Amino acid sequence: MNILIDTNILIPLEDTSRLLDPSLAKMCRQSEAVGHVLFIHPSQKEDIGRDKNEQRKNIVLSRLEQYQAIPSPPELSSEDLLQYGWKQASDNDRIDNLLLHALCRGAVHFLVTNDKGIHRKARQAQCQEQVHYLDQFLVFLDSQISSEPPPPFGIQDRYLHEFGVNQPFFDSLRAGYPGFNKWYMESAQSQRKAWCISDNNEVQAICIYKKENNPCIVDSGDSLNGEALKLCTFKIGHGVRGRKLGERFLYTSFKYANEHNIPYVYLHTFGREHEMLVSLCEDFGFKLAGTYKNRDDVYLKEMFPPETVNSGVDSLNFAVEYYPYYVDGQNVDKYIVPIRPEYHNDLFADISDTARGLFADDPSMYSPQANTIKKAYICHSNTKSISPGSLLLFYRTYDRKSVECIGVVEQTYRGRDIDKVLPLVSKRTVYSRIEIEELLKKETLVILFRLMKTFSPINQLTLQKAGIKGPVQSVRRIMHGQYVKCINRNS
Image (cartoon, rainbow, N blue to C red; front, side, top):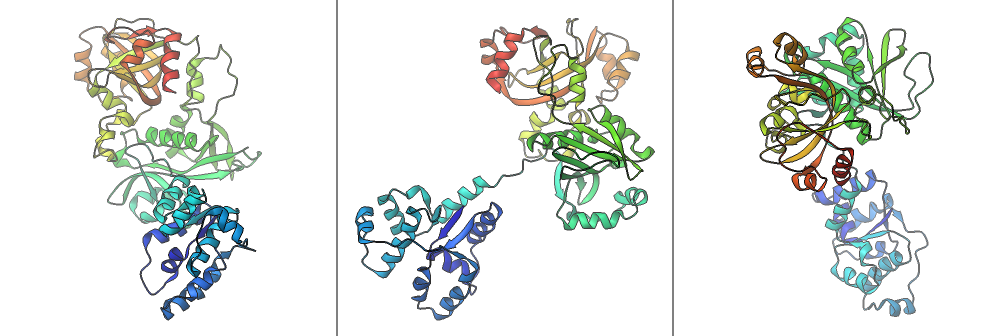
């Protein structure tokens, strides 16, 4: 858009003899960022020429050439003045009127001015919506800048230049990839970013990412059709292993790809060091696409499922391949699952009380099971019919009394055998053997599930209107129609 700036904005903006107002700097920076062009009216040279401060006048006049001037500005007739209802008793009035007239004729989209008289005349001409005070225009610019959604809680989004490449954390990458330091510095100079965990700028875990357009990702193959998110460097330091940060980084990348409508996520792996990473990625729909430079294996995940889904599709396999998308048709069973606030906080990091507090971005405040996508729920429910692929709507009891997330069941176990339960939950919880044995004094239901989605709360009243009556005190099945009424209200 074309933005005309008044002389009372132009003079302080270009007067190099005094400190620049941060608001004016922000106006220029953000206007350029969104493609707006700042214009002046040719008559403003005359206006500036009347400045009694010779030094300031000469400085500002010398700097006007950097602006585009309105070409062939419309002339203002006496009939125009009568139609607008404007007075023109001085040269200042005449130039103010010429600026407004250019706006009214469509020569520019906005006029930015702090002159109250011009704003009054704009109301007379009914073009006041296009005439902004500087502060109003900055608010408009803020609304035009697409702010980057923050990463999930506990994950930092940092520039590479914030970290020294020579720190020991990067030693294994230097050893495995000749030229790593050079690549890192070039990436830093391009203002590349990474999701990471760090302590006093010492990296503990990192995932360097990059958006690409139609990349050719393997030696023999066509280019991808659309944007792709490349996870360029993916490493968890020894000191923080066991905290499930690999899953947390994958969750972050999937969230980013969805928010930016990116259809592909891919990464390179090489050697035994990446065996665990390959296993993790395959568990979330990544598939081997080929090799790169006859060395690296390339794993690719397609983010978006096909537009048409067969009603008989296996709902669990679908959730694995197209995570975080899932099937929720009539053929899929749905259950509402009560969970106490302390366990809800522990399992679901992004909707926990911690995420709403002062330490929301402190990764040490979240337990390993909070970082996982694959989780375990242990209870003493009598329900016996839950099958893989079923949907779980977790109902937070006592305080919020609401449903805020959905999971897909992977596996269930009912019984009291510690030798069966402990291996099932070992990768998903930090329960000790003693704690699990205490739970197993009664027959226990273990549900292994994937967290698929969080959303704004579905409160108890909405549940009741959907036909889910009474207090939610145990796991129970709900009908498809009840589920639809809840989710449609929340979508």
